[in-house]
Length: 224
Image (tube, rainbow, N blue to C red):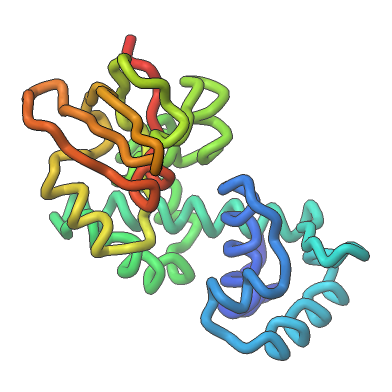
């Protein structure tokens, strides 16, 4: 891929659109403005330029769709981001709660050569520190493991934590304090009428109470 075909700003747009789709939500201008911290007019202008460049199209209902050209760039940038996160945590020792923010600064500068070396170092089947596969993302977790949000998990069963939402440092610190990390096993004891869930970690009998803001950002699969 020729880096000169896109600016850093355009790459950020493409990556964010792709991530919204990966989260099984609909990418629209208002969502992009909120996620990227820019004004709606700035989003409109950027989308027009990128449409002319053949990176995306905006449907009549406002939904934004990546073209094959735009998707290729977005997927490659996401891969560089996840590799940067693993480099920061697995090699340098950065806290997992800070990895996403720091990787945002590095992802645009990682060369194809470094990508190849990092893939060799970590393996193509590995996941980022937050549990997302290097290739395939959340859809792959759903297909391979039957991943669901913890909020959707029936009570009375044991689950393995596969992935957590990585963009909120305070949330990650909260989970780390509870021991809820990718790979952890937990049992859902009860679901209340207000969607609060009572769980225990497999290694403890201490009850943990989680509200929907947390349980909707944790993906699990039934333990095997």
